[in-house]
Length: 390
Ligand code: RFL
Ligand code: PHB
Image (tube, rainbow, N blue to C red; front, side, top):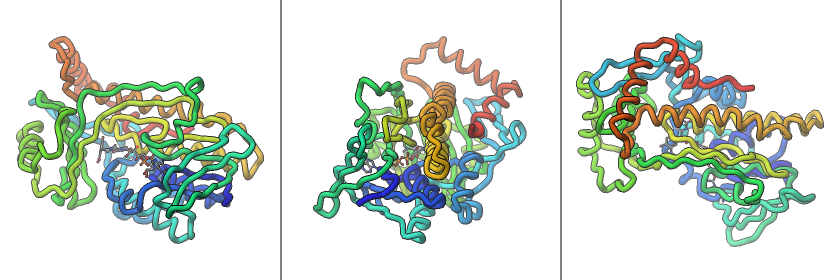
């Protein structure tokens, strides 16, 4: 088998890259280790920056997103008994964001791939990028019991945090930056009407977030201990805890119901540098992880794909490699902006087990400043809405 770009991973990064390359006349094959059903069953992100919306629209993926996605001017922050304030992205930076589930994007990407008869090989196992710095880059894998070799010009490692691509970069080249947070998020989906705004809560009992997927599908999260398991959190306990973390006027309006999905995710910041090694290019969670607090993970996967597809188009269309040569540097500038913001917002909104009185007061002081300063709010709004692409 031969293709121009071998793409490892059929998540949002891999599928979007394949779609954009196809539109530029560049051939690719996507190798995904799971089944489609499994990929579609993962409930993850829900917030799209304007820049991400623009990339998806330009890739021909806008129709359902524009119909079903919900635009928001900003997000609210509430904290223990004090007044709510609103980070107004529209007012301060003239950009809105959209709530539209990653599951829907993934469905839209699979549908587009089917329409064009894309080469998406699911349930491919033992996938391994080979000879990435040599003359014959290729990927080996197994499927339906048979071994295969896919020759290519480039390999895109879009296989997420637990993927294999990053591991072929030698330790002498790869530099990793990591921070693990001492708590997780327990998330549920319920078929109930959501809160009108995305509402982040800082409370002595821990962080909470009210988000949404559509007018009859809510997404809620609470900060939990890393030792907690799903079985520890029957629905009643979840709703009681969620409501306890919001002020009464909001708690009263939270409509409860049976959960249709429940999962616990640990929180981590992680960056692998460089994002390129020879003919291997990493994109999305394969190269970086952010805690979900800033809603940046999927948006970074999309911006990486934007930069990488632009660079590959320049290579094939104009015989220019300067964008490929600068890919890692360009992508990492945006990555570090989002990594810093997500880390900062995580620190601002969570209770850390080792927080002393000093840290507690400093956090309250920062929330107080943010609640009262239009300059501080404008800065947060600019970052939450997402920085423009280079
Ligand atoms: P993915 O989605 O992990 O896809 C990688 C794909 O690669 C496959 N794979 C392999 N395939 C072949 N061979 C191998 N060896 C392979 N190893 C893995 C996997 O099966 C998978 O299909 O990475 P990608 O494409 O980079 O996309 C990244 C996003 O999924 C992620 O950043 C976001 O979901 C993060 N995130 C959020 N991002 C936002 O922008 N806004 C949000 O509101 C938001 N909320 C969230 C989130 C992530 C969460 N969790 C659970 C991690 C909320 C949560 C709870
Ligand atoms: C979500 O809707 O899943 C969501 C929204 C905002 C975040 C994280 C997750 O910061």
